[in-house]
Length: 197
Length: 107
Image 1 (cartoon, chains in turn red, cyan):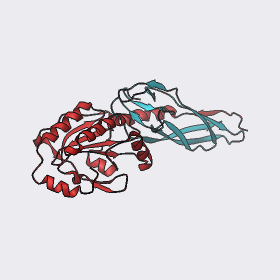
Image 2 (cartoon, chains in turn purple, brown; image 1 turned 180 degrees about the vertical axis):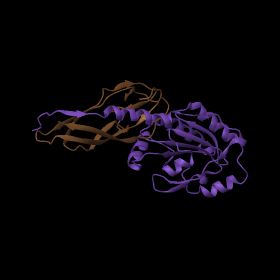
Image 3 (cartoon, chains in turn brown, yellow; image 1 turned 90 degrees about the horizontal axis):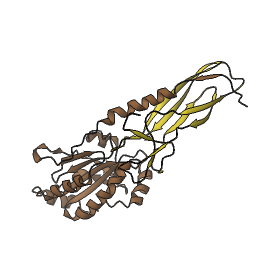
Image 4 (cartoon, chains in turn green, blue; image 1 turned 135 degrees about the horizontal axis):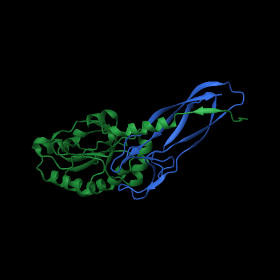
């Protein structure tokens, strides 16, 4: 039906050259693994995102707690490697003023995220992220990107890309040892009434 | 690919990974045929328990077309989209879709 006729085609090579360029801006991975001293910490931007049940969750609801805020996606293998570490931290420290918040950056939304989270048995709160929230945190071009937030709602550490598990363990422990800010406990109890965390 | 980066092949090892995919949106007088993807490499990374099916370095995708015997001579452009998702050894980057335009000449 379609006998061959002479045909000149060009273009595939050009398309792959675009691949090269597309990766290069994101090649600059920068990690500030250590917990910053108090004076260098900046407020973690507040946001409201929905959890798997459609309930709105505000970061500021967690004021008074140490929060591990993890931007991740189902298609990100390094993210999947860190998730069990965060589950262990949640188990270890959830009763000591600590919470993990996972912010999914999946374009496909809960259809992709719910089965994934269920398969891994994630025991912490997962929220559906969006570009606006990512922009508040510097764009979050590379995943995973994880922020440790102190009890006063300030960013104490940033990990871009797969980090060393000990950095999270030690960072959370160190932040939990810091005294809770005056008044934060009362506000937190009220704000977290009804929260699973 | 830039050194140190990889993209998933068109047949990634896990169903939640995003495959390399070339699709056509308009091919004019051409009838698209099979797209031949490069043979993947199975590479082990620190962040994964099992080797991943990936492409690295320089590689080619071959797109086959047919043209009808009575197709008029002349030029055209086949357009499509290439979707990919890249990672390096420590982090992954959001999937991207880029436009492809392939000029052709029927003689």
